Length: 320
Image (tube, rainbow, N blue to C red; front, side, top):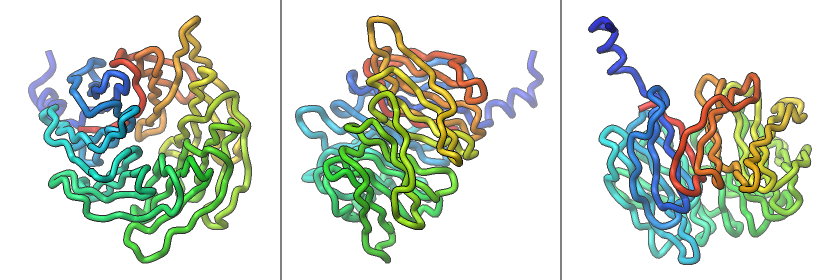
C-alpha cells in the first residue's frame, strides 16, 4: 500500500498528458501518459488540424481548419475538467491553423491562412486582440521564439519565411526559401528555422541572424513536420509519404538515422510531433494507423503505442 503522504503528493503532481487532434473524426483525445489511457475524447469543429497547450497546464486549443468548407473556429479545452469550455469564432477570417500560447497562458498566437496573418486571441474571452500581417500567402505553420516576442511562419503559396515582432515595434520581414514550404521548426536556441518543401522534399536551414538559407537536407518524402527536442540534441522530420521519421543532428545538420514506421499494405503516415521536456521522448501521430507512437530518442525506437481517433494529426504535450 502507498503511504498516505506519498499518495497525496502524487495526486498533486503534474500529470504528463498528450492532446491529440483526430482530424478525420473531428475530435480531440486527451491521454494520461502515467496511466497510459485516454481520459476523454471530445468533439471539435470540422476537420481540425493543430493543437497547443498553455504552460500552466490549464488550457488547450484545437484549430478547426475545415475541409472543403473553410473552418473559422478554435475549440478551447479546460484540461482540469476535461471539457470544451468555448468555441471561438474568428469569422469573417477563416482557416486558423498553427498555434502557440504566449507566457501569460491565455493569449494565443495563431496563423490565419486566408488573412495572411498571425492573430492574437484571448482564449478566456474569445476576443481577437491583435493581428500582424505576414505579408505572404497561405501562412501555415508557426513557431514562437523563446523571447515570446518574435514569431515565424511558413508561407506555402510563396515558398517563404516571415518573421514578425508581436509587439508591433518592427516591420515584418520575409525571405524566399523554396517552393511550397509547409513544415517549420525553430531550434532550441532560437537561432535557426528549418523549413520543409513539399515539392523538393528538402529541408532548408535558415540562419535568423543572417536571414539567409545556409544549408539543406534531402529527405525521402514530404517533410511534413519538423521539431527540435528542448535539449537541442536532435531534430525530427516526419515524412508521411514515405512512412519514415528522420533524426538529424541540429548542430552538424547531418542525418543520424531513419525509423521506418511502415505498416504493410496500409500507409501509417507519420505527421504531428511533440517532445518531453527532458528531451528523452518524442510522440508522433500516425495518421493512417489511428495511433500515437512514443519514440525513445536515445535508441530511436518505438517504445509504446496509443490508440486514438481516426486521422490523428496535430499533437501537444502538457503537464496538467
